[in-house]
Length: 252
Image (cartoon, rainbow, N blue to C red; front, top):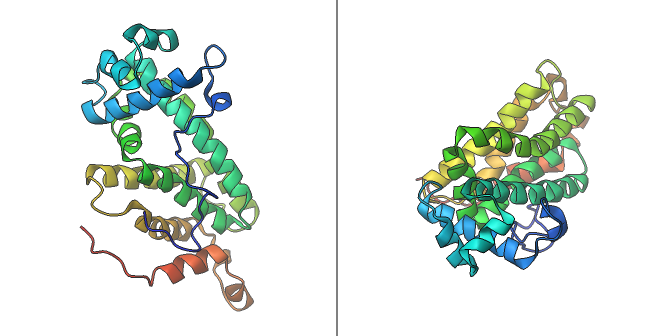
């Protein structure tokens, strides 16, 4: 991943799937190391074999546990897939809320949202394959559970939009749910295209262009910088535009 000195990064490089027990214990108290090992093994197997081609026995071997141990924690393969997504997203939302609280204004928060969406998936390709491809192969009966889990992330986006509207930064003539669909849909499709292209480009190189695209579409007409406002335009805009002058690899 390309690192820029002023890019919004975590204080230390961390595995977004380094599951914290207090954040992911959902079913019967403390899950422990076996639970984490099974989930990480499931990511690897789902990414390599696909959801329909994955076997619980192979996941067990990858995790270093007996086949029966899987069923102490999960009802089956579909429950494993949903649990992978729930565990990752709960960690992601927790990290994202903290990250957004560190930013000084709405444009900077939007930029951070884009970066935090792309960064963990750019660093963990197998996880990206699972979230962008294999979740979409799940049985229709699972989609309701997946959408329910996703709700917490969408709530964060809604909150940012409402903050932007309240501050006069984002336009008020478009409903929040439509703005949210534009934001999430753009982020989701960008990552999916990157996965399907087998990482021929660096995903993080797309973060600032995507931020500028979203901000331009969301920005209220009265928020256009001019005069003194231009001098006070957000640091996020300045950083994004300054970094656009750096050398880029050829598009593929």
